[in-house]
Length: 483
Ligand code: SF4
Image (cartoon, rainbow, N blue to C red; front, side):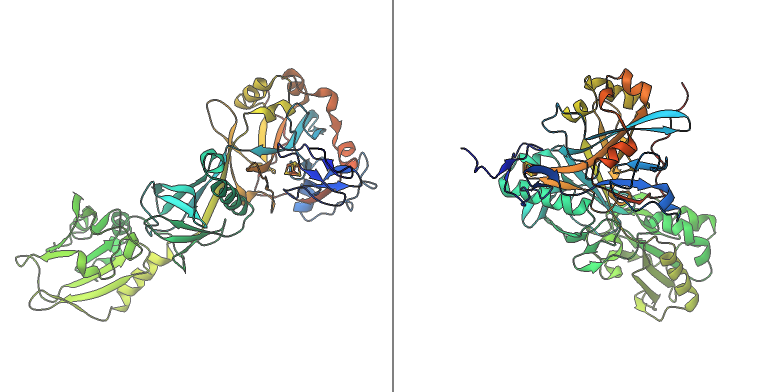
């Protein structure tokens, strides 16, 4: 099929859009600008000067000339463009002198088919069984993975959802990943579980309720932390928790404080004294269980041990749920007003909880052909990274590079500039990546040294904008440690 003459072809990804003048391609990242295919966003530079409250020269190609780009400015892959179809050198390969060392930074926007996000949701609430499918707008986009201490974890995206299922599955997986990586809120539903709204850095919303507190610890840990503050005020405390429910007087903490046994027995499977598993089913009630009435987890009171008038506190691991009872003459717990001193300790549990947030880590495999944009001998780039001679950043943020083969990177999207991510309809996620190393190391690994230009020259050729460096991130263009 021949394209209409006025349209030109973009070859920045395998979709190969024909783009009419003034129009953008399918991903909105490239435009036909008077017969030239041009990236729609400027390449992003980050400046330490701006971060520390200083000023930089207003950014325009005409005014930003050699000598005016300070050493504390680094080029990111954001807006740089891609190297597809892979034999092309990276869009920007820039040199800078840092502390007397000649450094090179290679930046590109990478098209990641192998990518996904790990989402950490600070909540006790049971979001769904481990391994359950996570859906976005009805399509499977990931699964529930192993819970962590005080957090539920989701694994979303990945090549099987992006390309191994139906068209809608791939499209919605890509849309969910893009939104999460760009800091937008995404609604997810979990088979056999809850609905949750997730946004990086924001409190998660579980079944319509914003989560406020991350638990202070498991039920056993909560007993240990507050046991001495309860002594003298209570005769028994049960900390309800889906993992380990704690019973104060039976727990080692109560024993060490010489608290007499209460005779209260909870349901569930005893792990060790005062520590019980499976007192109820997982749920969104007390302490991540389905408990709404704490007395339902009480199996019995031992008439030989329990005494009328005993004071019982039931509390959850966040202090969100609490109840106070006094045993009557028949050893039946009766609700009673909670003493102010006990309430203070309950409030202290809440005070010691950290705020609940959702964290989104982008994970992607950069070990494929994009390495050819950096070097003619791609495996040398991988080795250089493993040897710590080349530093990898993603939109300027530090990336954890997984050990083993390939270049599998993981980055906290909240440490990246806003809206750093894009997409292409293959479908895949587009993310910036930067490789920084000494110039002599770059030559040694077979880099495209003939394409290295001083940073000012590269910037003068491009549309660019400069933002303040995130001072919480380590500066990437420092010479590697002396060898
Ligand atoms: S989807 Fe975007 S990058 Fe791919 S060919 Fe079309 S305009 Fe170019």
